[in-house]
Structures are given as C-alpha cells and as structure tokens.
Image (spheres, rainbow, N blue to C red):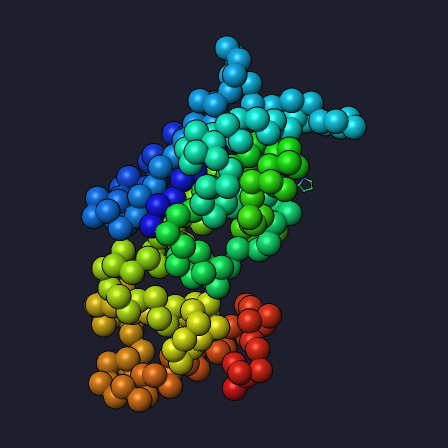
Length: 235
Ligand code: JFH
C-alpha cells in the first residue's frame, strides 16, 4: 500500500513513523509513506498557502491552487488521483470499520489543512471523503492523518508481527468479544508487589479463561461505553 500525505508540516510525520511498526513495514516495502510539502506547489516567493475568507470572519483559509497543483504534479491529473481523504472536524467519524475498508485500497492521499480549514473546492473536487477522527478540534489535519496512517497500516497483511492480534481487539469485527472493549491482560510475574494474576488465567482451562474474558469485556463495555453494547452484546 502507498500513502501520500500533503501538508505544510512534512517534518511532523518523520519522528513518529521512522521508529515504529510503520518504519519496519516501510523497509519491507509493504507500506510506502510519502509526505509532501504543500508549499512546493505554491507559485510565489513567499510560498503562500492561505488567504482571508470570502464573506469575512476570523482566521485564514487554505487556498485551493497548491492542492490541485500537487495532485496534477504527483499523478499527472486530477482524474488519476488515488482515493483522496481530507481531514476535517466536519467529516465522517473515522472508526475501525473505516480503517479496515481503507486497508484494502492500494493507494491513498491524505490532505491536511491548517488555519480554519481548506477552500471548499478542494473538498468538492479533490476529496472522495471527509474524515474526522473525533469530536474534538485539532489545530490542523496532521494529527488526524497520522491516526489514519497508523490505524490503516497496521491492518495491511504482513505488517503486524502476529497475524492474529487484530482479531479479538476492541472494536474488532470478529471473535467472541466482537464490538466490546478488550478484557484485562496479564503477563509475568504471577505476583507483583502483592497483586495477583487472577487464578482463572493460570488454571489452564481454556473454556473458563474464555468465559472470564468475555464476562470482563461485557461488564467493562457496559460501564464505560454503553453505546457499544448492542443487542448481540447484552449478557
Ligand atoms: C483542522 C480548525 C476548523 C472551525 C467549529 C468547530 C471547528 C479549527 C484544518 C479533525 C478533527 C480536525 C481538523 C482537521 C483539519 C484541520 C483547525 C478547523 C475550525 C468551527 C477551527 C484546520 C482540524 N477530528 N478535529 N480537528 N483545522 N471550527
């Protein structure tokens, strides 16, 4: 999978993704992340990317031309662009289902704005979809795009060390605790500062372990995320 990101802060993406999972996926060629500086496609010596809003109001709006020029330079034309997502607080809420769908694409382009957002013509004529990562207002699209990159790339087959670890996690779409928050996890030592690992997890009885985990996942979900407790999750 190839992911292109357009941003005025390309350096933002260097640190987090070089060290991690994605760094290794990049080396193996499974995921190719290319971050592009939007200012490379400005036409003036001051490399301007923003202007005052038509109709007035506070703040500045990102001007459309650099986005279109970048797409034309990178792909040879707007019609040849990959699946293009614009980060915005007014977008469709990003979730695990969307991540799994996006993980099947072979090429994505993520558009990051700053200031008060991007000229509507970019939304209308470049973006296939508008994505919000939650009901919170960020200072720009970069953190949102980083979330999308991380959530999507870990689902690309072969990227994760353990091929199974996507199955039973929170918001996963299959397994005995599908749609529930995850159960508690323990590792060694069995006793740490006087706190014991629950005996059932050391019993060797897989049926009892599974029942305990599902009960834990259900009660935790009811308590902190009742909205996730659909009819199929009611105990
Ligand atoms: C972004 C910003 C818009 C306008 C009422 C609420 C918002 C500040 C580009 C995504 C999520 C973002 C996000 C994504 C891209 C950009 C800052 C935009 C407004 C009116 C203020 C610029 C924010 N999920 N949260 N934030 N900004 N207000």
